[in-house]
Image (cartoon, rainbow, N blue to C red; front, side, top):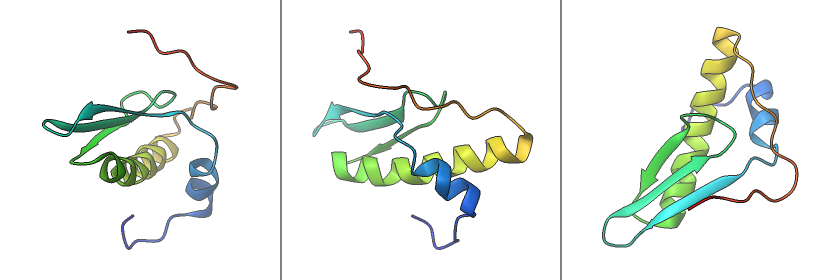
Length: 84
C-alpha cells in the first residue's frame, strides 16, 4: 500500500469481507476486482501482485466514494457464484 496513512473510516471498510476475484494467466498477467465495488479493478504480473494492487485500488475507490457522498455497497453474504 502507499505510504500515506489511511483514514480510520477507509480502514474499517477495507477490513470488511468483500469478494475479491483474480483471473488471468502468467503470459498475459492477472486482473483483480471486487465484485461489490463497481469499477474497482486493477492488474498485476502475478496473482500476488494483483492482490496487493487491489488493496490500493480499493482504498482509492472507497476514499473517492466517501469524498463524493456515494453509497458504499455492503459485502455480499456467503459464497458468490460467478457466471462464465
